[in-house]
Image (cartoon, rainbow, N blue to C red; front, side, top):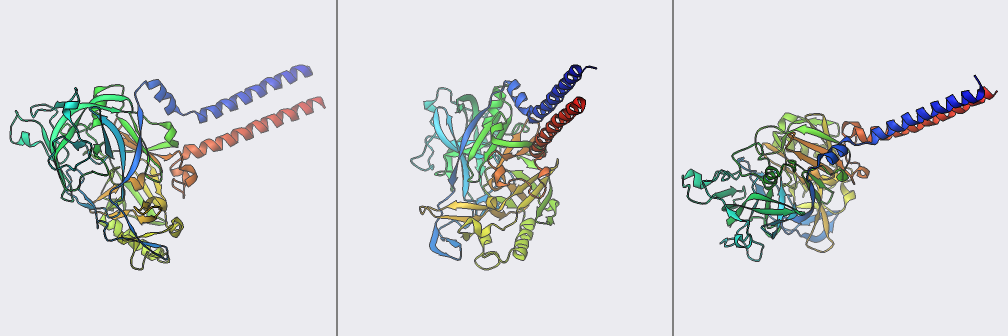
Length: 493
């Protein structure tokens, strides 16, 4: 064979090698979900989330040994009764909630985003006990407003109780609702339908308008509450406003995601998975079928090298309406014992006052930098790691420029509630189509080491495997090029 032919064959082979390697590289970088989302043609939109203090927080001016004391004016606890469950959960450090802005009947409202309840509730004009100087819903201002009669098939339960008009068999009356809270507060009202607009997308939805508010309802931290619990699987509940949008528009998928940064702010994506909010792959765990909660099955809970029994965690729900991480009494007590055994050298762990009392907080982040990560496992092989800067909540005082880092884990009863503390740094997917909850590392969280740091491949294998393939492909190309040069030299010799 002539030298020119040999060189031509080698050249063509090298082209095929490089082409094959490049194709492999592109395949690994290609996100199949992006193609499916683009080809779906479905409607999806995003809403910014803001953080709001549940109540005024003030620290004593005296700061000693990195300790900041909360003034006695702070409420001793905040209780919540999740839906119809007869469980009162003390949430002593529950400082914050996440809110979103919406238009209902072309009237503006700020609503707390709550995946732990179902009925959206806002104050109705004429409410005799609603606080003054706040946005109220006035049906007369909306041409699309309709008061739902008791005889309507849309007159359903609120999550706390069935409509009393149904119980009294008064079909001619209007549909009513009542929601009870564990701190003794309560709201009563009427069920309406009207047009909601979120980021330019409009639809007819069903919601509650409060006629009476007893106790500390949302205001002034928000005008009302946006329930995003599960109603697609329950025909006895008024559908959530998002579920109503999905039923009215087949191009909207019953899937939404919440991305929270370390300050508790972020974005709510509705009808889609927004790939700009996460990096790597999404890890999914099935939703337990019964009930209106996003309940998931735990398989493990570990701190350092110590494991806690997963069967002691009770029912586990993902709830954006709770800012803290709520553990069952048994698990919480064991966790506190572990801290006092292994982290007693850190101030305010073993001595009094203790950070666990929710009366004192750390002054600086470095004061608790050596605290452990909390590692959770869920059905389907999902692994989530929570860093100490998640559960030591940065709390802003009403004193300008004064912050404290306060314990954000609380002792519950028989339920584990994965609140905002758990969700920070992650993009959490609530998929009512496939009945699953997904977790992905937040786009801006990779450099903050969010993920299971003891075995990164347990949570985010795609991210690291892609990087490895990039390097392997580069090495392969280099090796191919060098081999071609050597063969040419041998032929010429």
